Image 1: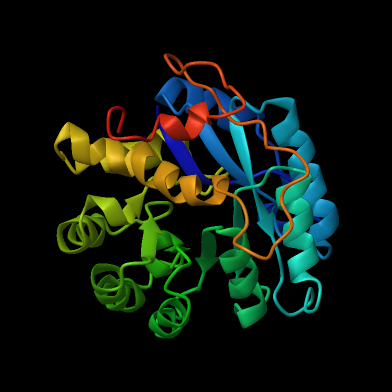
Image 2: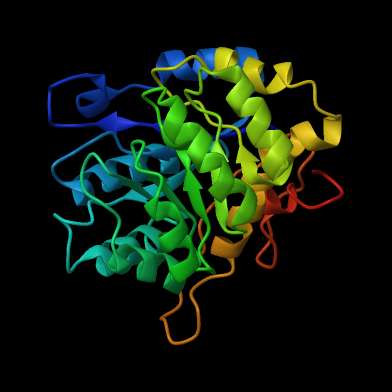
Length: 284
């Protein structure tokens, strides 16, 4: 099992570049299959209406629930006052397992963090190099897992990435993903300083090649058990909390989500989640 924790899918409406126009999965899936990637976390490209965009992602996930799981994309500023209801719809109706936020839209807010806490969801927050507030955010919400992709900067900002390593190593609920990291020595230092349990494999697909992104993880030459943490175990561990449902005081889901099954994983029953079971110690 290899899980890509970072892939866009669906249609944007900005028309300024691929990132806000369209994220087709056909080529990505062929490349992912060839590389051995078995499961993928999906969220929308940039959009002016994330309610609509999230519903499109939900349809993609529903068409292949054995392959995909969804995250709800929200804009903390534009969606102010309705983040909670958007996340509730994403979890209850669509079975989504996390929240995606991008500083290109706006900075993360307490409203987003509170929704993540209430529903036990991890937050994948692209800070665009602004790594200093990560400590404040994570310490204010120690029971929320924050995944900061690209070691803090997709723009290859070495200063931001190396500064982020201290947060990654010191703060228990801060994680990162490998997507788009071009300075290999910084990635190697991240694993060395923070440990393999703090790093998740991601591609920032469909635009980056999953085989090339996975090759970076393989090039770390880690022990097999450590590599499996990065390629599947860590993201499954984070999603296990989301599968437990809302915290006390929140309404239960109307129906449990349909989740992925991989080779060798037993069929689902009403009492277990086989996709998450694959992340248990006997598998990961």
